[in-house]
Image (cartoon, rainbow, N blue to C red):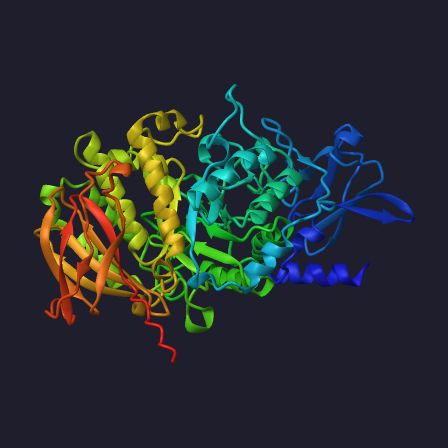
Length: 632
C-alpha cells in the first residue's frame, strides 16, 4: 500500500490531518492503466460496506469495499462516471443495513433526493489572485469591516418566485453591495442540508455546497466575482452538532461514530441534534479538514463558527450533565478542539477570519492559545446587541432609568476583538424586525432606527447587519420568499436605505471609526452620565491621531447650547447627521462650533452645540491650512 496514504491515515486517526478530503470520499484514479474512481469511507465498526450507484444499478453485492486500516474501507470502479449518484451500503455492527451519503462527498443530488454525486472540483480557473495578494498583506483588525449577512435563497428571487443560482445572484448582489458600502458578505450555511426552515444550521453534507442554488463550480464563480469586486466572503459553519437524518452522519456505522456515545451527553435537548465527539481524532480531522476545504477549494475568506457556547459548556441546554474530570462544566475536549482548529486555519492562511458566535462571558475567546485563549480572530458581541436593543425598545421617556444598558458595553469593549451583530436571529421567531422593535409612531420608529444605526457605526467593533435591515423591513424575515423590496416605493424606507448607504460610506471614509477598534486609545468618553437627557458624547481616534466627535441623542427633544468638552482649540464642523431632511429627519441646522478656553468634562476646551432630536451627529475639527512662507 502507498506509504503516503498510510501516513495520511495515521494523521487522520490522530486528529492531525488537515486535508482528509483529498483521500477520503470519491476521487479519480488510474489503476493498472485503467481510469476510474476510488471510494474511501471511515466506518470503524461496520461489518461490511459496499458502494452502490447509478453505474451498478444500486446493487450492494456488486462493489464491496475492502478494509484498509484504522476503520477505513476502500473500493475502485472503472465504470463509475462524473455526475453519477452513489451511496455507501453499510452493514452495521448489529447486522442491520443502511444507505449512507458520503461524509466527504463534494456534491449531493438535488432535493428531495439525498445521494452523493461523483464530482471533481478541478478545472475552475480563478481570477482573484490580485484580491488574495492584497488580503494577505492586510491587517484586518485595523481595517474597515462592514458585513452584510444574508440567506442566499431569500434575498431576491426571480419574477416567478424561483431562486437564483449562484452565478445569477452575483449579477444582482455584487453591484448592490458595492453601492451600499459593504466590505464583506456573510452567507448563512451553504453546506447541504435537508430542511429549509433550519436555514442550513443542520448539515448533512459538510463538503457539498447545497444543490438548491447550483453546482460547486457555480459557487466558485460567485465567490470569485465577489473577490474581483473587492468583497470578502464569510461562511457560516456548524461544527457543534448535526441532525439525525438516517442518510447523514447519524450513527454512521451502527455506533456513535461521529457523535458522543454517552446517551446523556450526545444530544442537544433543545435541537434534538447529535453532538460531535470532539475528543476523537477522526472527528477532529473531519471538521478541521472541512474548514480548510472551504478556505482552499472555495477561497472563502473566513468562517463564522456557529453555536460556540453550546460547544464550550457541558450543561448547555440540559438540567443534568456529566462534569469534566475536574468536576467543572466546561467541555475540555471542545475547548482543545477549537484551539486546534484556529491554529490549523491560521497555519494555512494567515489572513483568514474566524469569528465565534459565543454568547457567554467565556474568557479569552480571541486571544492566542499560548495565552490560554481559544484563538479566534473575532467574537460576536452579543452583550452589546442585547443591551442596546433592550435600550432602544424603551419609550424615550423611560430610557433615563436604563442608561447603563447604553454605556456598559464600553467596560469590556476591548477585552476581545468584537463584531457588533444585528443578525438574522434578532428578526425571527416573533422577536420583531428592527424597525418594529423601535418605540413610537411611524416616523419616530424611523428616527429611532437611524439613531441606533449611527450609534452602532460609532461604537468600537466591526459591523454586521442582516439583509433587509438596511431599508427597515417591517415584517420578520421569512426564508420562503424574497425580501420586501416593494417597500422602497415608500419614502421612509427609501430614505432609510439612502441613510444606511451614506452611513456605510462615511464609515469607510473615516479611519477613526475602524482603525483602532481593539485599543482603548481609539475611544474616549466626553459625556457618559447624562441619563436625564439620554445624551452620550465620545471621541473615536485612529492610530495617527485623526478623530471624530460622536454626539448621540436618544430623546426626541432638541438640545440648544449643550456644552461639552473638546480636546483642542479650533473649529468643529458637522460632517454627518442622521437628522438630515434627506433621510427623513427634522433637518435641524447644525453649525460649526468654535472651541472656547473653558475646561469641561476633563478636557481643556469646550463648546456649545445644538443637538438635533433623536439623532447621531459626527463632528470633525477643521484643519487650518498652513500659511505659505513668503519668498523674498
